[in-house]
Amino acid sequence: MGAEKVIFKSEKRMDREEAASHLRTLADQLAAGVIVPGPGAAESLPPLPREIVLEIKAEEKNKKDGTKFSLEVEIEWKVAAPAGGEAPVSPQGG
Image (cartoon, rainbow, N blue to C red; front, side, top):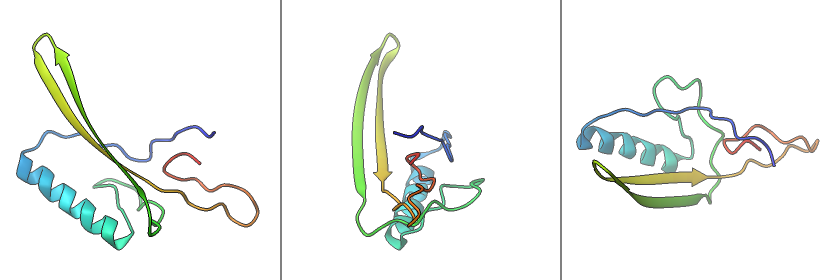
C-alpha cells in the first residue's frame, strides 16, 4: 500500500451561502468528470471514471465548551496503471 500524499487542502470560515456556492461548483465539476480542487491548486486532479465511490460521514464530538458537529464528503476513484505496470500518482497515493 502506497503512502498518502496531500495534493491540495483548504479550510476557510465562510457563511453558508458561500459554502453552498463552492459545493455547487464542485458538483458541476464532478458531473463533467474533471475536478479542480480550488483556488491555488496547481492543476486538476486525474479525470474521473463513470463510477466513483462517494462517502458521507457525519460526526458529533462532545467537548467541555459544547458539542461540535462535522460533515465529511469524500469522493474516491482509481486511475488504471499504465501498460508498463508502473502505477501513476493518484489522489489516494497509488
